[in-house]
Image 1 (tube, one colour):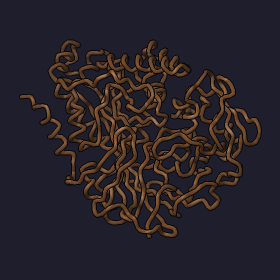
Image 2 (image 1 turned 180 degrees about the vertical axis):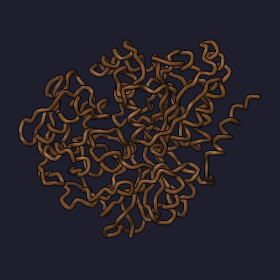
Image 3 (image 1 turned 30 degrees about the vertical axis):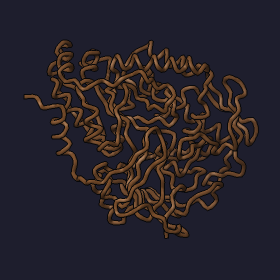
Image 4 (image 1 turned 90 degrees about the horizontal axis):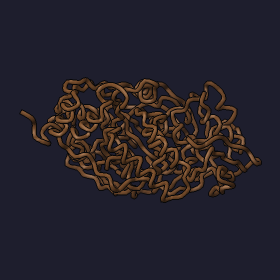
Length: 518
């Protein structure tokens, strides 16, 4: 006898959740400011300490401390405090100058000119200047360097120094969002970054400089006494790596941590403080459309119909998520198509499509990881259960994050692979170039028509025409079910009572914005 709509998920959630609480957290929709609540009390309001040491516990260890090579959120959590970018964002997401002294000017259709802050140096003593910007640009776009971040910089063809504090960024076609791309590209020292040991000896211009990395245990940073900008009162920050959510929470409660990432929604009431912000993260499954059972569109559509996304939002994420509208885009992103509707939960229709495709009993490999994103393992396992209910045979494989990245960005595309996709550019080009375009680093389709629309939109300077191309592209990907579309989730953090910090809409964990009370 088939389970009812919610019973199957409720059973799995009951097995997966190791702790429950009655605590709740307020959230703000549409990328608004974060909200904070106290478990043991309210947010700290005591005067700040003169200086303080803090510990941040991440769900996983960085794969590298080279900020240009991998697309790794654990690496970014550390290196966002070591390195900086030409453009920056406010905690609310507004694009503002960073290492650039002002907004860039457009010299012509394919040239943007940036004027740089003066007197800035890298931690190793190298000067930050136009030459270091040129080196940073040319390094990350070099095909031989094989950066996993290349989809962020798909239009950039190079850079040229005009003088010591002026640099031109060159594109191979008109690019209306070039300034936003430079918010993502971290600047590295020209000489040090050419050293093979750079990933183990990072050097940036940021408010914190590297002290040590004890593999498997911790990374330590200390405040940069020569920092050119403003910073908080944290003198030393130690990052520890704890994949298990309950262990992270225990360390926070015991006073052994000041921030933990991926606080489980059911544990919010147990943390001394918690903070939540509507995130940029979209958990989804990339489906291989070129081979195996999933090459049949009916099977892909059935997979979307088989999963009760609203139940996952309500039960697995305790309401800290919303169902995606058949696209890997938030409403606040340019290119979001408001006319699309989510695939509904209809297991009977899913079974019928699978039978029609002759795919009953077909094995589908689901690849995931554990600890990098909020409830990543649980999401994959719950989806596997839903798929088994409609006649497919899911084989769930959970890999360590480094090996998982090799499979996500490797040449051989897995049948189905989980990813939580973010979009700090706030523009559809980021996700469409990376996951929709047939040449995208995480794509699993061979749709030349779709790729053509994405290429055209990237250089289209007419706003309405560009938006129309994106609407058309995400509509086709929805109809063809190139992904198993799921959710947009909140970022939820646990914090100690002594820490004052409001999470950012771009998910950067910037220690300079934290204050520790006396």
